[in-house]
Length: 196
Image (cartoon, rainbow, N blue to C red; front, side, top):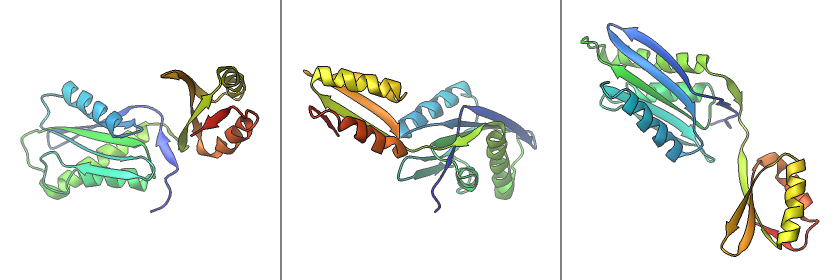
């Protein structure tokens, strides 16, 4: 599998109707399984009268995938959604397709086409952006040095949070993987700070 390089910037929605069944695809960024589950539950509650909430996601590093048919015939919903995420090389993305049953059975080929088309529509409605792998670093040490390092981090516009871990002050830095060497270079100026 190739390394995924793209993600989406926001939530997008796309609807289509096939033989009176309505399919609503919701595509959204999610950094982990907990974020995905939160959105899945939110969309299920918004569409509590729908018959199915089928989904797929690709998240994490290494990439984890999951597809779920939510009561549709096996392989007719989740896998077509996942196929669209894979073919568009999207990572840290989830897609939930809600189906309101219209009274006519579509058959497995019809379901595959509908779920695939709904997901594709949501992808086309979203903004595809470059994916940057992020690494989390924790910096601990003497308070005065930590504050000087925080000043450097702010100048570099790194995503930094000040945390208090018991009695030890700590900085948490969420940084693009390619910027980690620069963080380590700046950190080497402070003998009283350690990073893990």
